[in-house]
Image 1 (cartoon, helix red, strand yellow):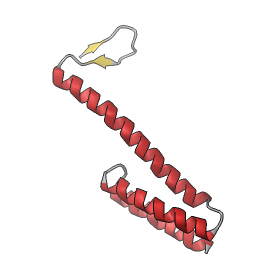
Image 2 (image 1 turned 60 degrees about the vertical axis):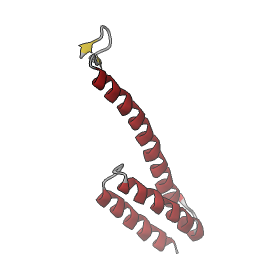
Image 3 (image 1 turned 135 degrees about the vertical axis):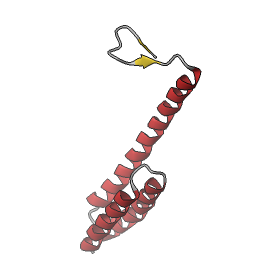
Image 4 (image 1 turned 90 degrees about the vertical axis):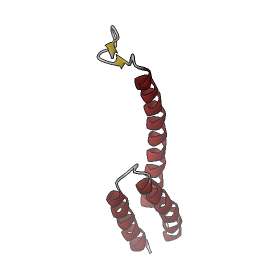
Length: 95
C-alpha cells in the first residue's frame, strides 16, 4: 500500500485483490449504513407513537426489521432480542 501525498494517511492498495476488497467494503458499508438507518427509524416510530394502535402497528414492522438485522449480523442477536423486549414493554404500557 502507498500513502498518497496530502491525503492524511489514507492508503491506496497496489495489489489487485486488495483493490477489489476495497471496492467490496465500500459497497457493503453503504448498504449497512442504509439498513441501520432503516432499523433506527423503525425503532423511533415505535417510541414516538402517540396512540396504542399506532404503537402496535409500528412495533410489528420494527420487530421484522430488528429480526432481520439480527439474522444478518447488522446488530448482535442478543441486542436485537433486548431491543424487541424493551419495545414490547413500551407498547404494552401504552395500552
